[in-house]
Amino acid sequence: DTGVSQDPRHKITKRGQNVTFRCDPISEHNRLYWYRQTLGQGPEFLTYFQNEAQLEKSRLLSDRFSAERPKGSFSTLEIQRTEQGDSAMYLCASSLLGYGVRSSGANVLTFGAGSRLTVL
Amino acid sequence: GENVEQHPSTLSVQEGDSAVIKCTYSDSASNYFPWYKQELGKRPQLIIDIRSNVGEKKDQRIAVTLNKTAKHFSLHITETQPEDSAVYFCAAFGGATNKLIFGTGTLLAVQP
Image 1 (spheres, rainbow over the protein chains, first blue to last red):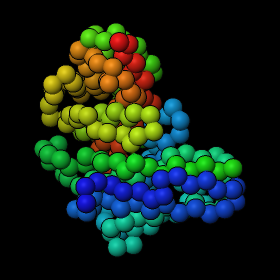
Image 2: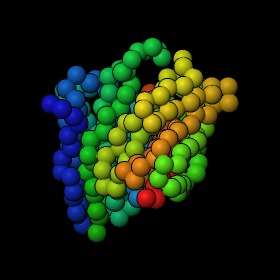
Image 3: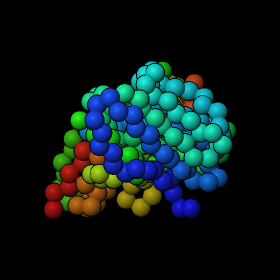
Image 4: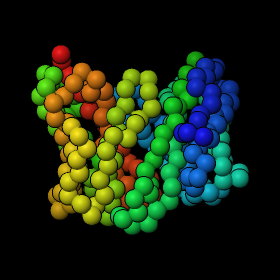
């Protein structure tokens, strides 16, 4: 595999419906991140996993959002009862855990193409 | 938590001129500072990065400088070309967090 894959690339849904996005990271990467990006803004951190453990969640991640990485490989991000304010690009990124400033290549995030959500 | 500020928000230059984008960060323990280029509708692509144990790094027409004392870092693009037109994001990683915090982006337009 040559990069981070995300599916679907586009999702249009009606308010109140549930949606699920999938991310397949670079295979040897042990960290996986989810970000959200709206037009004209930088990516905003949502959550990250180290292997299968979810280590941090942003306050942006309301209880309607849940993310999993069951076997430490692919991850899913589910949004329940979608709202129009959830419309955004959901970006996944993966990296290799490293320690210290001399760990060349460590903590370099590679992004997927994103899943664009439109809530009508 | 970490906060990253980026300036300017838009930058227009003539082809062949230089472009400079500046960022400041708040967490003095941050140790990794990448720059991403994002074209319309595309994913952010890493173009250059710097770690806190060096002050400058160069890759062809792109260079990044880091001033740890002042907690700011800058992207320098020389001999700009129309294909350099995109949104550029700076980011900071490390310290008390294990995530990248992004700046708000700079829309660079290179006029032919």
